[in-house]
Length: 335
Ligand code: ATP
Ligand code: MG
Image (cartoon, rainbow, N blue to C red):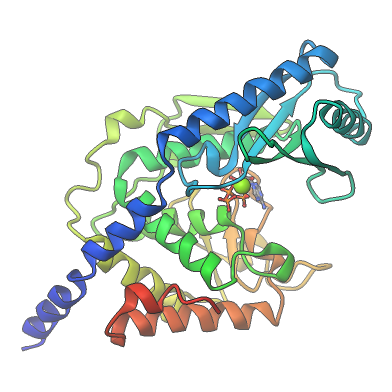
């Protein structure tokens, strides 16, 4: 009888597949948008190279990791070799150059955790953040992109989770909730944990790609075209995965002891990372290990108020997936 009941629940949840896929499709950016991004990037490259002929520009973040929804801002990294540059000076100089070329809302934020220049291009309507020599972000962008090539359910799940997080106001690091990057890591980890697994752990496999960034060695298996079909023994549908994802973060995750780690493809303990107590402003109330900068907890922005908000939102989402007659609407209701 239990089994029969379980089967009925599955069928019941599977009626949500079509609407979830429709939401996913509606968020995928159209090809024109990619073309506009490229156009803006070449304009920026031209301007930058007049001042710094050796410098290169790289796209990173959601415009390059395949987790960007339509109308996203673009993130650009300016790579300058010269070791003794002063980042603030470069940013101010850069802001100057951009301003005099009619780019709008140009602003140098030299005191931010990651110092950037912000701008808006009136021709394409695209907003853009430029940082300097943030090579690690370019490398973790590639890792996310590579994971997305293995199983389409990762991109589907991450789009829905990001859309939910933005709708519910829990995608704002300056308010103590999580970055888009953190949510994508949560999705990758979750799909690594399914049985049978939907995603492998690329960093535990033989390295076919390896770069050193400062003192961090970034290495993993990046021949992902060989891994297409990896998760095909697992037949879970997007609706089942959305249900299970929220159920995990609402009722199953061990917030007191567990760290999620896509680097190891498993859960590791707070104790072994020495993330058991508050140090400075890092409270480790929800622990998400960065795949390369392993002393970095993406959950460190979360404080004792926002952890409550976050967990209540996970519970709300899990309960909606379980009981609401129309989850595809209720889930994304503005808060
Ligand atoms: P969105 O669509 O919301 O802009 P995004 O993927 O661009 O999503 P952001 O949170 O804006 O995500 O981050 C941009 C990129 O910066 C990430 O893809 C990642 O490479 C890097 N990044 C962001 N936050 C961190 C962090 N705390 N530690 C390391 N890298 C980070
Ligand atoms: Mg971004």
